[in-house]
Length: 221
Length: 105
Image 1 (cartoon, rainbow over the protein chains, first blue to last red):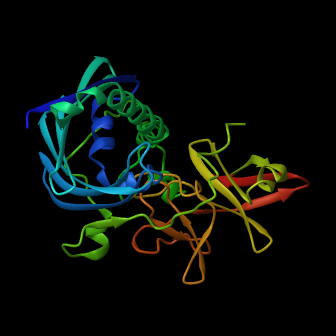
Image 2 (image 1 turned 180 degrees about the vertical axis):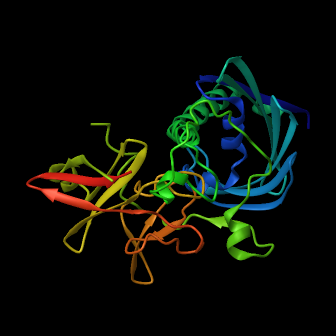
């Protein structure tokens, strides 16, 4: 049967440094927290500074159930990574290409190209695929936005992973000016599952199904 | 330590908790066992908000759950349930009439 592809392109501009955006995409465990409405489990099978092989249990728009997606992320260079998706025992194969374009200092545009391999007779689904993928991109982008803003905010207050902020931990500590601190990223990002289990177990599961959400906080006084 | 107003009793009415940034501190004010308390809202793991979800219970103990990666912290002590080296700072809180104050450095 002749194969073809459904395709879609989505993009958005952000006010964040490229490395912070990459941190967000390569923090694989946050999907069951920040994106708890769409994911319930992630299992990282292998990861290093250039790639990540994982299984994700995801709810795709318009589908009322979770599907297991096997993902291979490959960092092509500092401006681009590719994700190879496999669903239903490799019956469905897809690919996404994320491209990061730095516009000016600490501003970056993200472009996502989506490809889904299909038998040619399903090419008529192109408009629907394009609609779903664009909706998916916006939904995830909006959910990630407060996370990115907060991450940059705490970073500029001197936040260190697994430590926090020095003057908060130690009320007697002198505050340092970190407002111009360049964002740093080192892959792979340390996983809490590895540390918690102290073993090779890397499955990360959402802890609850229902929750009352208070939100990200009240505005400043 | 400086005493600063962080909100009012009306702010806490709706959900029994609220968080607010004040002078570089993100503080979660919450009502538990009829007392109003304050705890750092910044998860020391990656900086996520621990007050996004309401209080939950783990083995009968009340816990806060960070939105980003589900790390949980005991309400009473601020200690992380799974990572004992991670701990949230507790803030001294005072209520005067209908206003809530915290002590920060």
